[in-house]
Image (cartoon, rainbow, N blue to C red; front, side):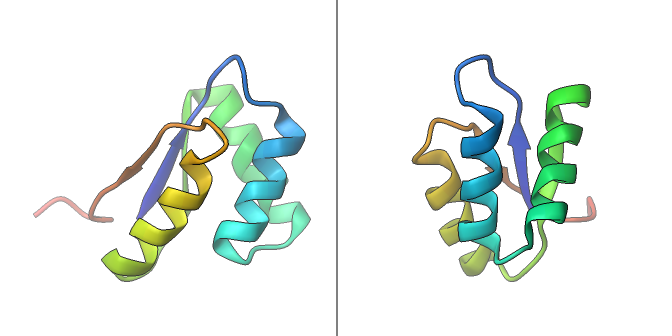
Length: 75
């Protein structure tokens, strides 16, 4: 999964836009994920195979959002 972290320098609109582009979600889902990261400090935003998550994380981090690719469940 891909997790994003809140920051004080990337606009909410930029986060929504990059989430839609990186994960293929619609604006409503991207808004909810952005709000969750803003409110709680982090949010899971994409669940897929590791290579797809790596690609999404690279796209998201290009706008300055810290990302993490991690297993959905701890082993």
